[in-house]
Length: 256
Image (cartoon, rainbow, N blue to C red; front, side):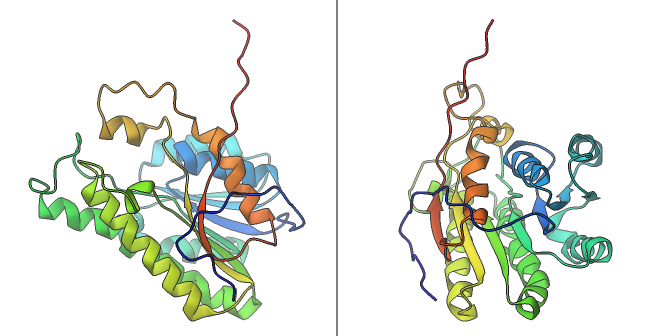
């Protein structure tokens, strides 16, 4: 299998791969990038399993998706309920063709230095950002291997490769996720089972606002302007396992 390694590759828009009728599991899908990805998948006729911790906001998000495709909402903490999430998804749809590990734990807000980061908070960060994606990948891989096809997308961050004050705990977890993804791709050695790590870049999201309270993020792209390039990865059969940098599409100004 040809892999990309640690380099960044621009996302293309070649779209020969048909997503219609496939089933995707998207974690952290009640808002932000997770919801934007789930929405685009639903528009393409993909059955969508959306998972998040907060039931009310997840159901509201699922209601917005219904009517475009079949949607199953699973209120769950990915660090505790991975087996249940996958089990109910497979029970409903039979297979999971696409796994998007988008749910992330930031840690204390505002972000502390490594010197003052509580080790108990770091345990939580690792459980959500590393252990839970590992567990979910292990649960969906047998089905992907039996069908000889599937795509795993692990959402990462430039904090995984760059040192930013305050982002050490989160960045370390994403670095671990990236290395685990690279290793899994080499171990699988199956071109039609892709393991992608995608850095969406800085976005105007609730999590980013929690990381930097009071910061003006209005100039940053919204998740819905970044999501199309990530969906473009799924649709492009030239894309192989590796690390990718999402590019965002400017949203046209609306008339006042």
